[in-house]
Image (spheres, rainbow, N blue to C red):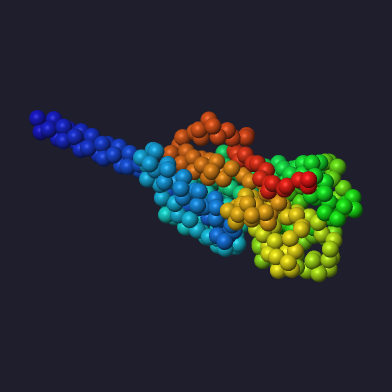
Length: 339
């Protein structure tokens, strides 16, 4: 009889423990923690994406009744700092990592640590090399197609030239003289944007001639200094400034304004908030803008899906189960045609 009572007690305790574990599991599923490392917190485009991620996290909480904690860190352009941040995220029990890599060629350390800890990684904006991305089926990338970006940037000038050649060939000599502002030498988007924006102009039969170019590392101040130098070296020659991003385009505009020059076309990429302001007031001729709402939504949905073991919604299809390419569009300032 005593054995029966003891067995009954043991069974009851086991059921209680099982029940407690079930509650604990449900509690764990009611919240997710996402570690986010930005290559540089002062990058305008990345700041735009950060703001949208914070908004999307709040939306996800409201719509799914799941608490979302974002741990956002600035790597300050240092891969070592970013690697340390990844270690910290893992030690804090983050369910998933969202990484904007400092060095796309050196993502292997991050991947090694994530694989060892079984923590999925969503890379964004700076695409790791294919060999690294193929190492594990829990690695994802969200960004834009760099070639598409560049083709759209070139197309905005091609379309304008066909409609109003005088709006592009400013001095009417039959040649459009341009300068090129490039981002980082190691960034795949910089290389592809530089090549294909110019190739699109050539394919569109815009008569172009390169005056000079320089690397400004995505930064407004560096681009401004380069543009100021070029205006001195090539006075009354430059008709078009092609920039790999809006920040550098705005730097060129800063230099033009200091010199009191307004009749040089400047085109950028990213559709940042200050870039759109410059577009609206006519200082920036055009930009290529990713759908940043979609960009942030996909990162958030993919991160949450990884954390909860769920599939990404069908409206966000992944190429090869790994890559999501955000839609883009041309935004151009309307130029009044000559009567």
